[in-house]
Image (tube, rainbow, N blue to C red):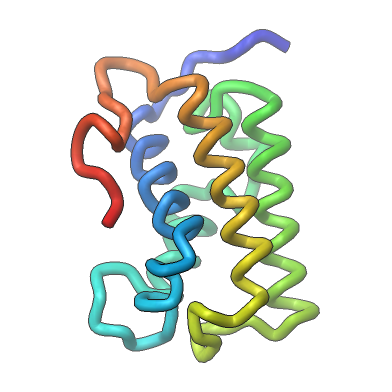
Length: 136
């Protein structure tokens, strides 16, 4: 299947920004705990990835909306699988510190998704997160 045009490049850029943060072990250690006094904690991150963007709820359904190819869908499905395994089997929660080893697989899969999405670009006239506000 050829690449498809992304309808929501701004949301795609936000997804990459959130996943780039998630891929960073130092960011996870500082920020991923419920009630942390940061701009994005565990609840915010999960809410964004599952509900706001819909990305992890239905990766295939995101094709053409925020994803531009089946390779991206497959990478996001692996990330979703990592989340579900850590949450359902490992007990990962908002009470788990960002240093919990369960985050490592999720962080690795998030980095893969960032790489795959960044390789295709962001569509429209949107700059990549590296050209504008980069994740901190």
